[in-house]
Each structure stands twice: as C-alpha cells, then as structure tokens.
Length: 640
Image (tube, rainbow, N blue to C red; front, side, top):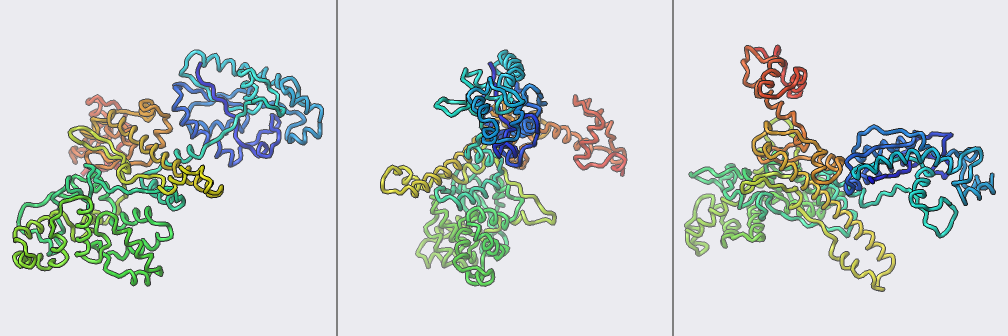
C-alpha cells in the first residue's frame, strides 16, 4: 500500500478559543493558522524526500479552513495538482453544541456530555451527529482512496480534514477505542508541529551567499556558543592567498604602474593577476568599498557598522588610510577604540594591506602574511622595504648591498620577489571594477564550476571561506553538565546556546551539501553547455534534478532561487539558466540578426523558417517573443 497522510486543518479563531467548530459555520484560518500551515508544508516537503511517492493526490473537506490549509501545504511541497473536494469529509455536526466550549457543553447537557465523552462513536450530539454518522459518510471516501493506494507503493494521498474525521479513521485502522475520557490509554492525536531545526534549515537553504554571511554575523552576535573560523584559501588550487592573489595560480603579478617604486623597466608583460582567479573574476563587478563594507558588516557587531562605513569612506583611491584614528573618531563622533577595532578587522581582509597608513606599511603587511602562510620570503625583504624603499626606487642596488653586507645579486633577487608578489597599492585589483559610467550589478557566485585537469569540478563558494563550530569553552562545559558544580540556570544557558549553535551549524552544512549535489547533477546533465556554450543547453527541469538526487522539487527550487553559478567561461549566471532551454534558441536568433544584411533585415517568419531548417521548430510569434526579450527591434525598425 502507498502512503496516506492525514492532516487536520490549521488554526481558526474558534479553534484557538477551544470552541466546537462543525458544519454550521465556515470561518477562514487566522494569520497564525496560515503561517503554521505554510511551515507544515515546508516540513512535509522534507519528509516527502524519504518517501518514494511518484503520484501524490490532494484531497480535502469542502470547509474553507481545510481548503486554505491544503493550499498552503501544497505550496510548501511544490505541488500544483488540483485538489479533490470530498463532502463526506466534513466535520461532525455538533448541533446545539456548535460554537460552545467543552465546559459550556458540560453545563448545558451534563449527562449527554458524559456519555458522549465515554463513547463518541455511538452517542449523538444534541440535534447533531454521532461518530457512527460521520464514519458512514467519511469511510467510503477513505476506502476508495486506500483501494487506489493498494495498487502501487509509489502512490500517496494527502488528506486535509477535521479532528473527528481523522481520529475516526485512525482509531479504526489501529483498532483503538474512540473514547476521549482521561485514562491511561494511548490515544492518537493529530498536531502540526514544526521543529526549530526544520525552520532554520529551510530558511538557510533559501539564502544566497550574501544573505548567509549576514545571517552568520547576526548569529555570532547573538549566540556566544557559536564560533567562526575563517579560512583564507585560494578558490582555484586550495592553497593560501595573499593580497587577493594566489602565488600558485598567478605567480607573476604586476604591481601598478602608477608608482615609481615599482617601475618594472623593460621586459615581457606580466600576466593578468585575475586570469586564473575565479572569485576575482566574479567580484570584478563591484568596488573595493562595497567589498569591504560587505565583509566588515559580516565580521563586526551591528554597533560598529556605521563606524566601518565612515572608515571605508576615508580610504584614498589606493586603498590606504592616511588619516589617524583620532582624526576619524573626532569627525565620525565615535571613539578611538571603535575606529581602531574597525581598522584591525579591515587589515585582516583581502586584499592584504588595505587600510595601511602608507605604501611601506602595506608592503610589510603583505610580507608578514606571506611568512605566516609558509612562503619562502627572502631574508632581507622586510629590511629592504622598511629602510631602503627610496633607494630601491632609484635602483641603487650596490649601495643597498653595501649597507646590508650582502651581495648585489641577493638584493636583486629580493627586489624581484617583491616586484613579483606584492602590490604597493591594495586597491589596484579593484580599479577595473570602478571604471565606466553605468552602474554594475553585484553578482556573487554561490557555486563555482571550473575545469581542473580536464574535468569539470564543483565547489560551493563558502565551503573554503569559513567553518563554524561550537566554541571550545561551551563544548567543554556541555560535556561536563552532569557535574554538581553547575547550577540549573547555568546548565540551561549552556544547553540552550549549544543546541542552537548545533542546529545552525547543521543547517549551514545541509545547505552546502544540497547545493553541491544539485550542481554536480547540473554538471552531468548540462556538460556540453558548460564546455561549449549556450547552444548546447538541453531541456532540463527542476523536477528531474530533484528525482535524481532524491529530494522534492520544492527543495531544488528553494535551493537555487536567487543564487548564481560561475561557469568555466568565467561568466556568472543564475541557476535558472540551466533550466531555460530557450536560451539556446535565443542565442541562435541573436546570431542570425547580427549577421543579417542591414538593408534587408530578417523578418520573424524568415527567422522561424531558418530555425526550422536547423531542426528547431518554433512559431513566428515565439520568435517575436524571444526577440523582444533580447531587446532587439523588429525588422522594419532595423532597416538601415
């Protein structure tokens, strides 16, 4: 037999007040009731992942409260199937007890109420129905549904009905008495219960990487048991980075030509420092100020966000902070300590050296970072920068060697290392992003798809940016809670915050794993598109991806909405591109129009005919629709 899912309608004003709600009134759900029904749909979507249901029917009572509950649940599970309305599933007719509470029923009819609570199946309410009457009209509906379910294990039925209807069927199936008097018997009850873990997991799953980092920042502020470990790692090779660049992926990084200190002289041009850095390519559409603002807001408490904005505004065009903390504090109306804390956080961000007071401090910070990350830095590099920067600019290598007591070759070797691996101006990597008059959208990829050793590889962006864990102090206390040294209040504090931290960490990991599985499936199904371009995009639906990875379609929709992927070409595209087969046809239409004779432009019908010759059959009106979406004028307006 397949799966029978029984759901009681959500909260109405009458049910919230404990009043009998039968057939005489038909109120809608309250706002809380609608929210609860929506949450139930989200949670049920997760449960359906574990059930091999290929065909799910939606059935409900004609009561408005049931129809509204079903609509919210169906939206949560991503089903657009037409609901089946069954009058036989209406709630019991309470008769004269309609709208009364249990106490009011006892006061009105004490003997009848006592008999009804002992045996509601056989006892009829005053001028109303008994459980037997309800079963007589409801059970045929269930019998037909269960007969359909028995034919295929992959079938399912979601029934939204009422308290007595559902309880009658459950007690019949389980062969339990329907008595509702207080006793030691176990009686089944239907209750929509959404756990905090499920709520957090579904909320985080739908977040973009920007929203996730903000949520992590807020959670770190509120929960002392949660700890963030930042991992500054190259997204291409997994090695350490410095100055926003990876020495393994872009070892020949050219400093800015604007400074005489780093005048490279004659020689071959160095490679583009961002050529092999996918994150740098992705972030080329926003400025250094936006980059710093986003990261500082994620790291600092909200009380320092305005101070951070002020400090960022004081950076010059080279990314240097030439004013003192005291001057900035005086003008911003904040404290010197607050400015110093913001600057300390800024100095830890990429590009390394941003926020330094001058070029010398910026270069020394980059050298220190290189040494900390295990790079083989020439032993005299720091001395060269600290004491001989002007002499380096004038190329007085022999004098420097004499002062340091080393060979001229050693000085030249250290100088070459400095020119190759350091940026005098931290903002240089962001200069290109600030050029142009038109505003550029900020697109941060949530997933990277790139070619590694000839194979397509998938990576969820934040997987190497940070990791979350329960703070060591809380973890050790949590492990020793049985000790009598801790008060009940302290134990409760630790349990609450550690539990919340673990829920949050698990939700972030689930999001990462879900995105990884979805992206891996897209790589497998859209391999030709990723390798050869949009012309090779094949039809694919979210339902197909969901079926392949074993989740519900709504999970795929929630996980990919408002999220972006960087594909091997370096372009950042929305996840929706993978599910939009018309992009291939649009590209063909664009190419045809770009190559047309400007004196005799192609009409929509001519384009449709040419596509048909290429085995692409679409109507003229569809060509017109796609052309409009491409913002291309009709033929009569393209004539030159």
